[in-house]
Length: 196
Image 1 (tube, rainbow, N blue to C red):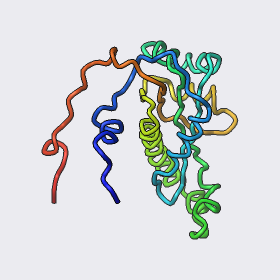
Image 2 (image 1 turned 180 degrees about the vertical axis):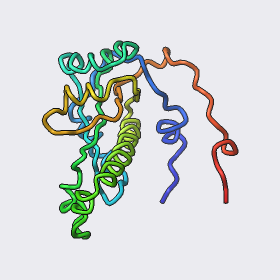
Image 3 (image 1 turned 135 degrees about the horizontal axis):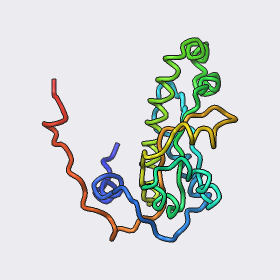
């Protein structure tokens, strides 16, 4: 497999940033579908695909989220073209007969072990949220992932009917580069890694 070129590396990693300020430029519904179709190609354990994404694209939808947001996140969220609630479905395993058909009974393994099911849903749903960020960057979009909201309140507002559980939020659109802060330091390899 070929190594990505330097421009691709910059777009995905070295020059990609977390944005809080957004251009007044929308993101088409077709682009969000393309974004999802890319993100789901990333690996998850046993192809569980537990993540669920709620794309808030209208002022009405943003206002629904507002009571659950920390005040410091109001402006950046209201001005972003799209806010994604990255959630997961605790009952993801009901889809395993279709998603992982070569392992008969995989759905019952999770159905009969609530701890395993919960850990799997959260871990792999989080991983899928990261894949969504990378897919957005690959499509030329900027992202502003964030916490700073009340998960329980968000779940009451958006997921009372289906039992999904929110994890984190991602604002998506076209960021204003001139309003970025200097990039924060990163830990060196020797600080964060061990070779054994």
